[in-house]
Image (cartoon, rainbow, N blue to C red; front, side, top):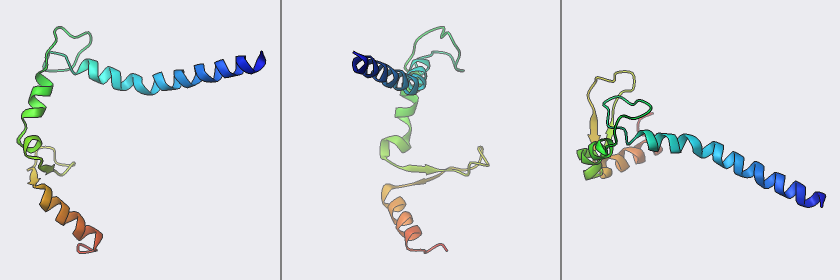
Length: 98
């Protein structure tokens, strides 16, 4: 009887931790359907505009890798093809830039 109680409590704790870890992901997905230009809650309408915008990006469609200096958000974006990025990573591994 006690073993069943502990088993149930352990399972309950496991499910609670699982829900706790997934809750932020669920919130982000729900907010992503907002029709406003700025995210707000509760949403005033539903839209797929954020997904449409993301999927229309040339770097996403072509499989390119875009890199920008995180300290200069308005700075230029360097876009590399997958082959160029692979060559760059190989150079880093080989110590070419040390």
